[in-house]
Image (cartoon, rainbow, N blue to C red; front, side, top):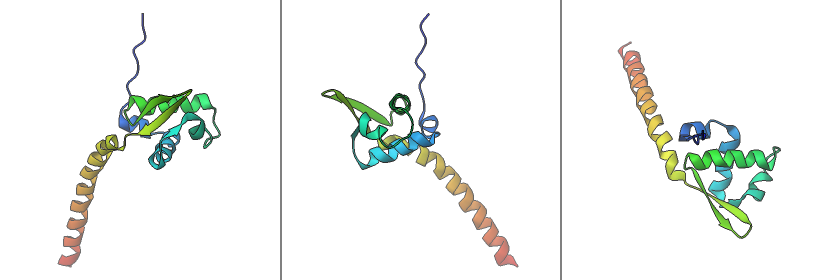
Length: 106
């Protein structure tokens, strides 16, 4: 019996602070695992596991270059989060407008 690969979504991927930090690093430039790992007190193996989650969520991709893997950010996938948050922006805009209306009545 084979184990199915877990597919992470964008929300699961950014739930971890280490993965969010990795995304920030990759927003600056494409980087190999060795450079990414230098920014953390965890093992390189742990960093690789975080990178795999980000890859499965399609937030990063890896390309072999010689003996290294170079990781690239795909920030367009973060649009899903922005879209979700926009709903709550509208919610709070409506609540604040109602509050303003109540305050102006007094």
